[in-house]
Image (cartoon, rainbow, N blue to C red):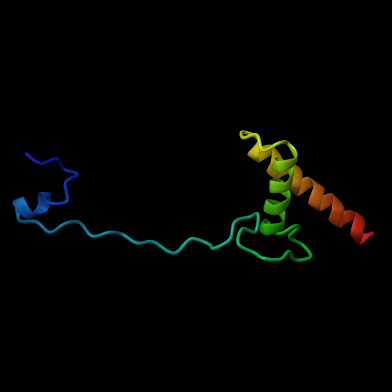
Length: 88
């Protein structure tokens, strides 16, 4: 006997397979602005700028793995502080 997860199950029972339900498309950007190439006055540093800085931090630590979140958060802080200083 075939399991209920088998796509051929309906063929043996004379049933049509269940339709796939498609919902609305999710938003294209996250709260961090993923996918944006530049920053706007209110949004802070761009995703690309944070990624570049986080990679620089990663390399400065010698490339050791396991601290990616800390590198990312440090990059966000540094870029935000840099921006605040330049706006003064």
